[in-house]
Image 1 (cartoon, rainbow, N blue to C red):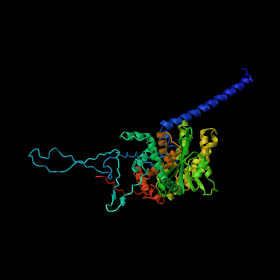
Image 2 (cartoon, rainbow, N blue to C red):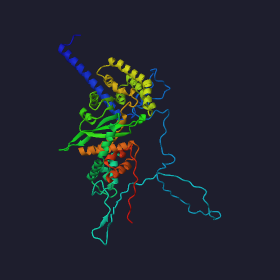
Image 3 (cartoon, rainbow, N blue to C red):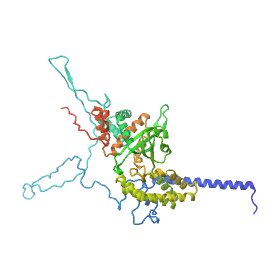
Image 4 (tube, rainbow, N blue to C red):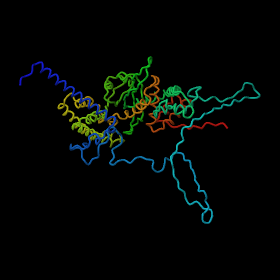
Length: 517
């Protein structure tokens, strides 16, 4: 067989290379499509038994078949030996709820035999949960004026109570209800307007928006105190998410950012309460987060976003910041890759990470010293094994592959990923703050965007305070109504705002308004 001419050989080589490139692009696209399908339709949890399809118990001489399956990588509850029972309200309903007793007597208590009177020998009691829907009402404030018949000009009248919006038609409680529906339960203003219209009250959405801005103005000082309290702790979580905002001028939509700062020391019984503050900003840059943390020093728990890395400057004027990175982000990379490749290497990596998470579930709720001791004794050998696996695998795989990319990511963040071994106060991942981004995502999906920059700032202020109230086990409406009432009335001054923070708050005793005869 004669050799083809040189130009034809070159063309054949070019076509071969092009086919290889297209096949690589198709494989990458297929993997990406598989990842999206898993995000939309796949299992929500990252349990090893789901990810590995029965390969969770690998024969590595360190995973025993008798042991329980590994806990979810990003779920808080400790692993249970058996399926937990569903928490249903079977039996007595909560005792704190008010009871309305309805007694149903028989049609007749005369004996059918002798017509004598029957006496009570017992009773059957059954309870059912009921609800009274929200009722709109009008509170008429009457202030009588008194004058002396013998003197001229002596008139006495009680001062008018202060309102959130002077001359407005809404009470503090109504505004608190609107704000809570919007930022605690993610109900957009137009839906609230429809609900009010169903009760015969037509209020324009712009009016509801003015009420919301007024509430944010009153609560600005409390929001500042809460952010300052978060930054006073030596370890905080930070994350960011997009926030569409209508810009000025032509009114085009631009993508701003909500940065979330949070604390929660409950996993080790520490002093920092569960709290979150959202900060609206137009940028997602290092300069922006550096400005927000200009006075902070301590441990910053974040994901691998490069804007955080420059914060680890030992010459910072405010003091040094140490970065603790998120192990769940690393695990998620290998989980997504395993779903598309079913590689034994990714299965082994996921199994090792799951063992570490199993240990974390066991020690959650213990003190920091105990957590550190257990991590040093049990988690560090697994981390060392994981590092050895990364070091051994990287030279043996194609450097352009996703597996190599993920291993290089682990190498580049290794010190921050393993910082939790040295400090029992540090969490293994950043899931605490990621969970606080979900309310923003739900509200963004329901409302589509913030009306303008001022609206985005109001969103950040109100969502921060209400989400923190929920984190502390409070009814957000009860808390907000009480806080606004005390602030508007002047019962709490600006220098006493700390008592209104969700973790310090105690409800005020309030008397019911007197009704006219």
